[in-house]
Amino acid sequence: MKDNFKTEEGVFDQTTRMAIYEFMNHGLIANLNYPISTGKEADVYCATTGPKLLAKTGNEFIAVKIFRTETSDFQRMTEYIFADPRFYKVKRSKREIIYAWTKKEFKNLQICKKAKVPCPKPIAFGKNVLIMDFIGEEGIPDSTLKDLGSDKPEKDCDRILGYIKKLYKAGLVHGDLSEFNILMHGYPDIVPYVIDIGQGVVLDHPKSADFLERDIQNVLQYFKKYKVRRDFTTVLNDVLSARKDEEKGKGRNRTE
Image (tube, rainbow, N blue to C red; front, side):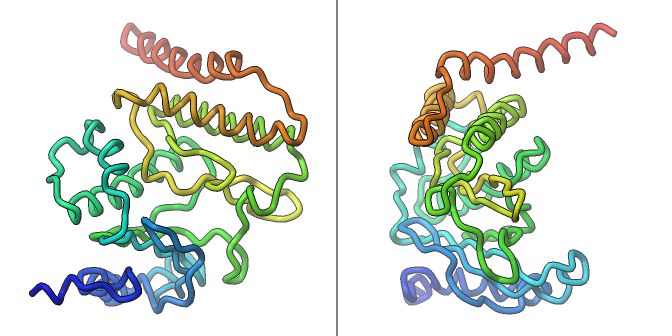
């Protein structure tokens, strides 16, 4: 039984393989092609879309994110998981934490889409495997803001700060937003896409305010090299006002 949990290349243990086979059997994945990115916590693969999903979406490629069950930073993950009211009942075992993290990223992506923040559309998840839209062209993944840079820094800075505000209004903080977690999609009108939102927390999380401030600081710090200047306090108050307006709107609805 122990052999079922040995990893192949640090990722493909028996449980992971079975999760992928199940997606293949359901027509979501045809095959994994190549890794888009590799990291300590997860690898992302470009995959050929399975026949059932292809017939539904017409998209030839999808992204498959596989969270590592052996090398992930569990201590860091617990900071985001156990104080999130959506995941109070998660068992404190490595695998259960990884499975909860996978579900968490799926749910956070759903919130992003609903808030109209550009991000990969979540398609399905199981165990430690998450299927999403592929962000790129003809099987070639888009580059991050870190790697590609910005041709329109003023516009991109304000747009990304707007994403933070939209997410906050929707009750979510990304928690790790930076130039590393933004893809630059499309040409010539390049649109920043938010990715890697598994650590995103709802506002009831005790550190949501700290994470929000860090996200804003990261964005402002990056765009300083383009000589884009935005006042942190002004930006923060603008983001916070979105939630206040949301609560006022709900209050009006209750009295009508």
